[in-house]
Amino acid sequence: MLRIAVPNKGSLSEPASAMLHEAGYRQRKDRRELVLVDSGNEVEFFFLRPRDIAVYVGSGKLDIGITGRDLLLDSGSPAEEIMQLGFAGSTFRYATRPGTAQDVTEFGGMTIATSFSGLVTQHLADNGVDASVVHLDGAVETAIQLGVAEIIADVVETGTTLRNAGLEVIGEPILKSEAVVIRRTGAPEDDPKVRQFLRRMQGVLVARRYVMMDYDIRVEHVEKAVGLTPGLESPTVSPLHHEGWVAVRSMVPSKDAQRIMDELYDLGARAILTTGIHACRL
Ligand SMILES: Nc1ncnc2c1ncn2[C@@H]1O[C@H](COP(=O)(O)OP(=O)(O)OP(=O)(O)O)[C@@H](O)[C@H]1O
Ligand SMILES: O=P(O)(O)OC[C@H]1O[C@H](OP(=O)(O)OP(=O)(O)O)[C@H](O)[C@@H]1O
Ligand SMILES: [Mg+2]
Image (cartoon, rainbow, N blue to C red; front, side, top):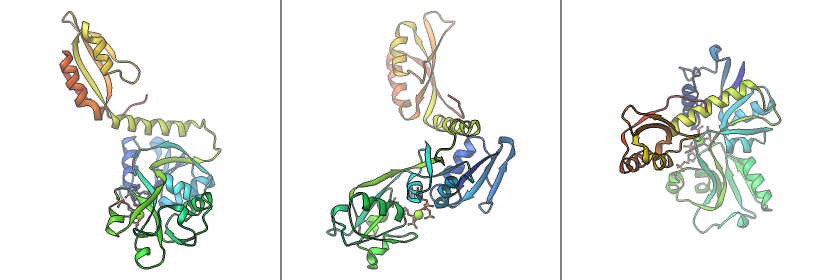
């Protein structure tokens, strides 16, 4: 059995379960379930606090886990990222009241409040800055209003939370984060069960990002048309019963599909169809 850690709450939880479901794995129906065995797929899921996942995976008790890059790095656990999942995208940044400081080099002697004290302590050390770090569990924006800290370091997505607290981001982002799959550092790379899991997840990412496009076009325009729809490997071109015409089938990025359909139409393509992809293995 492959033992996988999945976030049980917070921003990572629902999208992680949705992705696993799309990859064909059973997912829990009740949020109170802590462990779920999917015997058909020989996988056991452990629903854990996102912050603890890198600790379990780093200890080798669980084979792989889904967590945020920021949480992985903050934990200092001996685990590494093996796949990016493209959701829960955010930056990790310093913020303060206007006029307090411009960037990390001016933080000497100040106090920084954060839920990611591992990351912040490391970042201050890397920049040779001597400042104090106060660890808080969440809602760190309020720490400035209450005089606990002059600076905060927190997850920023839209920036709405900071703006509402009258704070502004300063300096460059400390890091860019997203949901990732992790495994213990140095774990064998060729574990077939892990490879199969990653292929399934990759299949979901591709199915979400691409559509299948079919169209008919006159033979003399086919080279130009396949230039617009090169596909991942190469498009399938089949003869049509109607002489002088071919049918083309190719995967195209969903975000470009409408523009490509317009351009194909202008080239003379007809019966242009797009269909969703439910699953795939490349
Ligand atoms: N607003 C957000 N947008 C995108 N990602 C976020 C956001 N808030 C947190 N994250 C990401 O979620 C992970 C944090 O997990 P955590 O459980 O703390 O999420 P949370 O949404 O803050 O949950 P909680 O309800 O426990 O505060 C990190 O990887 C972080 O980058
Ligand atoms: O830039 P924004 O789009 O506003 O999102 C960022 C906010 O989202 C998260 O907070 P959450 O709601 O999870 O509360 P928490 O501080 O208790 O974790 C994070 O800690 C930030 O505060
Ligand atoms: Mg939070």
